[in-house]
Every structure is written in C-alpha cells, then in structure tokens.
Image (tube, rainbow, N blue to C red; front, side):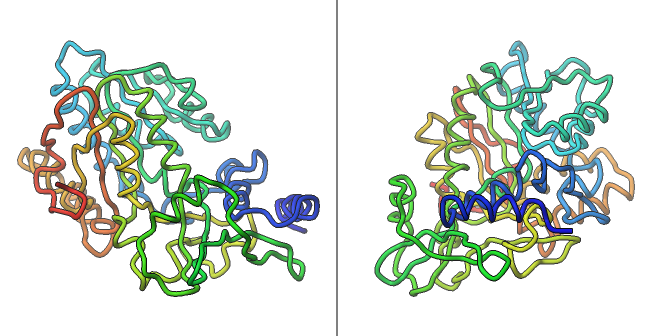
Length: 363
C-alpha cells in the first residue's frame, strides 16, 4: 500500500515545484493525520524508536522536581509558581514531577498542539491538577519555570549547503518514484542572515542545518514568562563545535526502531527526523529577548549537581542504576546539554549547575 504522506508531498511538489526541506520535515513529523508525531506512530523506549531521559524511569522527573523546588525558593515562597512543560509526549515526566513535589507547591501546565498526545497525557494524568494549552500564545503570562526535554531538536530545520562561494538552500524534489535533494537560491532574508553568521572557512559541499524555529520559540517563551526560569534539555553543541569543518554532513538524522536510516526522505511519516541544537544562537536570542543565561553544562555534570542531595538521603539500587544511565559519559551524560535562563531576577547558581564545566559561551 503506498505511503499516503508520500503521495501528498509528491502532489504538493507537482503543483508548486521543489519544496524546502524544512517544509518536508514539517509534513513528515506533524501532518495532522499522517505525521510521525501527530499520527501516534512515535514510540519511546526499548520497544519504540528512540530513548529519552524519561525512558530511564521516574528518577529524572524526581531529580528535576528538586530543581523546581529550588527555583521556587529563589523566587520567594509567596510567588504563584507555575511549571510549564512543552513537549510532554505521553505525560510520564509530568506524573513523576507532580508525585515528587510538595502538595500545592506549583500549578502544572502542559503545552500540547497534537490532539492524540494531549489525549494520552490527559489519560495518564487523570486526577492530577494539570491544565493544557494548545500553543504558547494560549498560555497566560506566568511566574515559574518553562521546562522542555528534547523539544528544539524536533523543530523543522532548513538545510543549507556551502558551494565554496555562497549558501544554497537544500530542497526536496520528486525523483524516480521517491524524493531527492536539489539546491536552490536562498529566498528568505532571515535564513540568509543566519547563514552569513556561520563561521568560515568551510569546505565546498558542506551541509548543515539552521533552526529558525528554535530561535522564534525561545523568544515566544520569554514573552510569556513574567519572572522565573527556562530550563531546556537537549542534544547539541555550541556554535564553534556545531559548525566545525569536519562536520561536513551536518547533524540531521532519521531513525526507526533505534536504528539510523540512511535516507531522511524515505517513508515520510514513518521515521523520526531530528537535528542537534546549536545552543549559541539559542542563547543569543534568549538574551536579546530579555533573559539572562543562568547555566549551561552537559547532563553528566547537571545530574551530579542534582543527585548529590538525593543520594545523601539514601536511595534504592534501582535509582543508582538509573542515575548511572542518565549521567554515563558515553550514553546520555555527555550527549545531552542543559541550558537555563532567568528573567526578572539575578541569575543564581542553581544546584544542577553547581559543578558545571566552563564552556566557550560562559563568560
């Protein structure tokens, strides 16, 4: 049976010509009926397509609950504290956090535009005090923390290629019954400006990603946050490492059943497609939107900071095994990064960043 999304995308290309890869990725992941996430096809965990921190068990949520408690204390106990989670998937993290928080400490809000995921979250979190918004614009201004785990890496990205003289945008065309890349001049002024900021020199044929959606997202979050924090966990690099000349094929990847697929254009709607986050641009946009950098480190050191108090109180063997997975340098510990911004307060040294390594973007 033909892949229905392949037919739809091919029809759009036949009507309007090759489409930017960003458009292809948007349809492949978020088409209302056939997209990888919106169709309910995405599966997390050992029996699914990929692992996340939440797959390890409840420890990740319980440790983050400690961090949220400290954030509330920094803001003052009299503050109305709201935890906003975006990218909640099945609601597991929210359940772990709410169960670990002192009763009445915080309101919990989930931003979820995908109806199938919102339904799954409501079912899992039934009986808990949680409210939902379809997008950031629907969210009332709040004091507290906005949290995300692996969110910007799933935003549709522009693919660009350096010819040795100029940047071109990588588009998708129909070829031989499937899809193939084709290059075209960059038409977007915003994309052209982002490409102009990519460090040179680079070799001809160098392909990379530009995530304009992540930049718009962090600005939108800053606009809703009155006072408090933004805490994001994701895999990625600082600018210099992201655009190293040796990374000639970029970071874009597609996977299914924990196996990397060689062609991200194959079987749209059936593969998870992601790209690493370029954190320096995200930080610059956050600061331009009125927030301040409160911490940036790898997950290994973040977990050490949060885990110190937890394990000082004693912990079961299962927690110790989960902790080793979360902080393991060759699994999650060094791949994932944690970035935190503050607004309306002087950036404190939070527990999770107590042992943060010095990086190129930290003053």
